[in-house]
Length: 74
Image 1 (cartoon, rainbow, N blue to C red):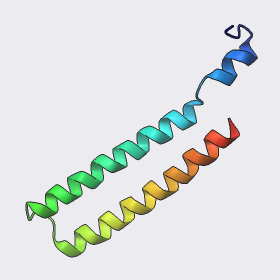
Image 2: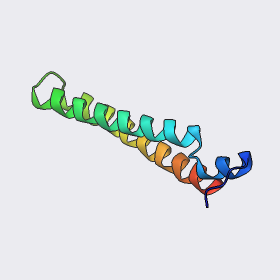
Image 3: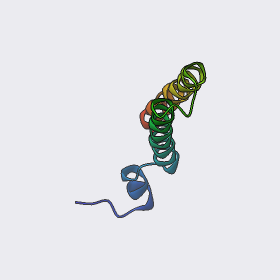
């Protein structure tokens, strides 16, 4: 039986912070692809690509850690 109390409903819902964090992770992945494309099309120098790609990877790791923590708390 589905919960009908506000508390029961809240327990079934994914917290918005998790949803937004997952969206941000997906956007970072898309940006990572755009960086790779720009490098392949020689619109971005290799050193710039490596620096920016490394920063995006760091952000994605932080977001993954945040998502894991938020899911554990919910």
